[in-house]
Amino acid sequence: MKTTFRIFKEAKKYWSHFIVAFFALVISTVAGFYTPWALRELTALATNDSVNFASEALRIGLLLLFTTFLQAAGNSVSGYLNHYGALHYVADLRKRLYSKLQCMSLKYFHKSRTGDLTGRVVSDAMEAEILLAHVIPDFIFNILTFAGVGVILITINWRLALMSLVTIPFLIGITIWQSRNVSPTWKENAKVRGELAGTVQDNLSGIKEIQIFNQQAHEEKKVASLSLRHSKAYLKASFFFETTYPLLAFVTALGTVIVVVYGGHLMGTGQIAIADIVGFVMYLSMFYGPVKSISGLVERAGESSAGCRRIFDVIDDTPDVKEKKSAAILPRVKGEIRLENLSFAYNEENLVLENVNLTIKPGQTVALIGTTGVGKSTIANLINRFYDPQMGTVRIDGVDICEVTLTSLRDNISMVLQDTFLFNGTVYENIVYGWKDASRDDVVAAAKASKAHDFIEKMENGYDTIIGERGIRLSGGQKQRISIARAILRNSPILILDEATSALDTKTEQEIQLALDEISKERTTLVIAHRLSTIRHADQIVVLSDTGMAEIGTHDQLMAKNGIYARLHEAQAS
Ligand SMILES: Nc1ncnc2c1ncn2[C@@H]1O[C@H](COP(=O)(O)OP(=O)(O)OP(=O)(O)O)[C@@H](O)[C@H]1O
Image 1 (tube, helix red, strand yellow):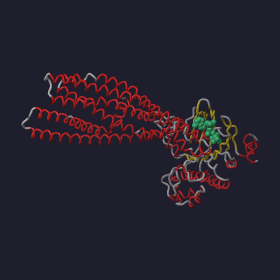
Image 2 (cartoon, protein in one colour):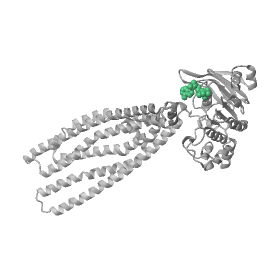
Image 3 (tube, helix red, strand yellow):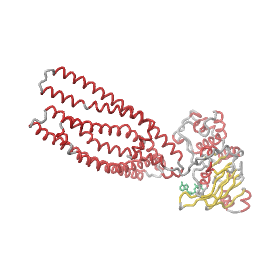
């Protein structure tokens, strides 16, 4: 109920549509009451041997035509307007959900399944449409019918009407019991469906690894087990529905039995006419209709609310990395980066950085090296504010990065990663991604600088070649060169190269290195590399070990020191 109220409140923009739809629904429902009444009138005319039968029948027929028209028109108007409001609300909801997802930190995405989140945006959002355009109007229709037909039944014969009410408390009791049990089971059903979607999506994305390691049987088992769990969760929900629905049908049929027996008795004693009995029986099926369908509606409402709650769970979640309300805009910086007493852990057990202090002067190239998993990429992620440190501060040009907007911070930083992600578009679109206003000449110049131009030109449609999902039609080295072109084009004062040339052969790496050295001259560059030959000329080389910095200096200084760096260098040289 709380979820429904929230949705209705949030759909305020479309209230005018819902209000008109409501009145159209009222008109069509009330118009529908006339059909049994017409038959009752016609039976009365026939049994009373009316002399004006033909003209009366014409009057009844014309009235029936008019009410049937009202019913159809009202249904049509209310259906369209409810859908108009509901589908526009779904579009707003999806936009809010997607924009919230974009604000979430990397930590959130590491603990969530992409398939599950996709399911929330695509399928769960449509549950709001079911609620607003189907469940709520159906509830209104049923309540109106129940109340309206109830009044008509009392008007026809109050004794018979009272007798037909005997079954109602039982029906209400069953419905309440059903609604209490159905909603949680649908929630569980939606959760397992999300897990199933997540697993299938993961597996299809990683199909190559699955085939390389021959894990098809294992993955198939996992999907089959989740599939069975989903079926069982669904079955549990169906159990409540399948047991209570026939029970409701049985109890409502008892009401008709009572009316037939008691109505027959009243007719025998002359207290009711045959026309009233005909009208009563016809109205009775309309009267019990809402009671029967209310349980199905409660079930649908439970299912839809569970889906909508999964969306609100994300919308209401607080991002780990939050922008302050008073956040200022960081203008284009000179590029000084200062890490002050920086401590960071992804989780409580695993401290990655402890009290790290480092200053990178504007325009300097600083290399971070160290064994795998020591925390090099973590430093890059902290500078970009993908995570916030537990202690300490990152300053750019002396400004605490927590005090500025995330957009203005990231506008100042370009990043080339080892795992290059390319979008399913053309080569051109992927390069221009970093700076949408760039001209074609700028894009070509950036591609030339990253040594990507020649292979792009050889592709079937040059820069307009579609590169497939995640750049599947390109080699690892080609993807990296496009990613470097994208970063060059972005032209930001801080450049982070995280294993940016690792997928390239030595010759291409040397060529690109020259280009990178060239663009590094004008900006602060943080290079993370395992191949020490690529960072030899860095202004400072920082050797990370355990949770902090073990050595810092130029290549020559560190070689002279004969410490970790010198040992690593020797190992790589041999
Ligand atoms: N999202 C995460 N959640 C939990 N732990 C993480 C996460 N990302 C990294 N780690 C852990 O933090 C530590 C530092 O990781 P980081 O990626 O910074 O290392 P790195 O020095 O860049 O390694 P590599 O050279 O292999 O790229 C590692 O122990 C890693 O397992």
